[in-house]
Length: 344
Image 1 (spheres, rainbow, N blue to C red):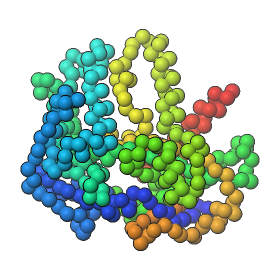
Image 2 (image 1 turned 120 degrees about the vertical axis):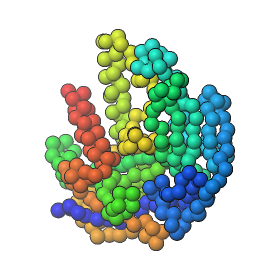
Image 3 (image 1 turned 90 degrees about the vertical axis):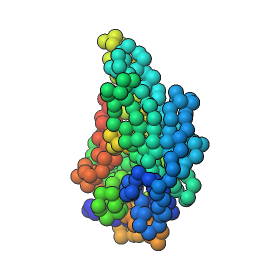
Image 4 (image 1 turned 30 degrees about the vertical axis):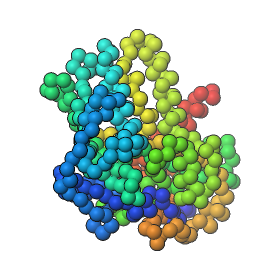
């Protein structure tokens, strides 16, 4: 009955991008930032001389950048988190159980090839090349990286209030909120995906998720009413791995890495990871009907986003091209199944 239901949705990301300014450098002549159209609203600079500084806290790794101050880069959360995480992972190679112990890799230098400034001052995105290779230089690892930092995605499950909470069919009657918006990197003007938002330096994942839900969906949700599915699965896996390691007596040094337990949509080229939250809300069927056809949001600011309500059972079909949606439905179902087994 509610298949294809559309509502207007506002976005936190698009207004930021609309006001951003991208700067390019001598060895970058095209826009490598998939989120910003530079033709009309960004200024381009080329042939800028590179400057090099060293990071003493990271074995004096030299960093070459063009136009960025050292503090500006090292205080940017995505860069700070990336280099500290990588450095810790590289240090674990000293353990005999590490697969690269006999011929370890080292971070030898970093080159910032391009970057984008939000509101003209804070770094929004950056493209860099990290030289990670063995001491003899005979083996190296791919190190071209698009840095943008973490994000959150929200699986908002709506259950009609005339369905009994204990009913086995409760989730069969549930609906999920999806966004439909232009995603120029994909070539689409109507890409279907889960609601999501960038952290923009905020470390409170649950707080950002709650804020996004309020501003985009018009729902006021307490942080305590959100379930972080990725964290939950991480806890379950950690407990399982502890039992396995105790049984085999074969430790794996890579398990001591400080990688956040989240969904990495493009681990081969981007640092972005997404924490997936879920929220269940019981609503009258009449409310769902009232939502149909309503529009809102700040479209005059480029927020060309609408909301689509689909049955939970159809999420794997409706969101088939969105990694967030596919990960969310899989984790949501499996966590429900695990909790049911634990209650027996």
